Image 1: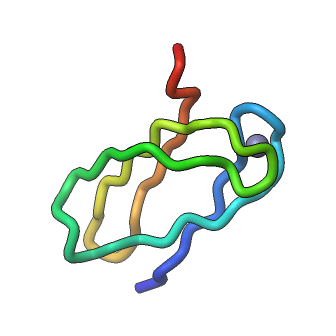
Image 2 (image 1 turned 30 degrees about the vertical axis):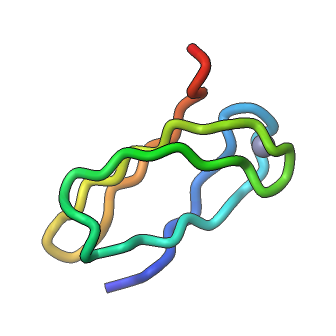
Length: 61
Ligand SMILES: [Zn+2]
């Protein structure tokens, strides 16, 4: 089971790594800022049996 998932920023399109907290409940949603352009994301994490399904969207829409 991997601890990080690569996603692409919805603002700048750059790849970022999201750290998955497997003890944080399921599903999870929280806000995080892009490591490249510092825009706020709405991050949603769904934990599957062997993987995490991560989606990010613009949090101000
Ligand atoms: Zn960005």
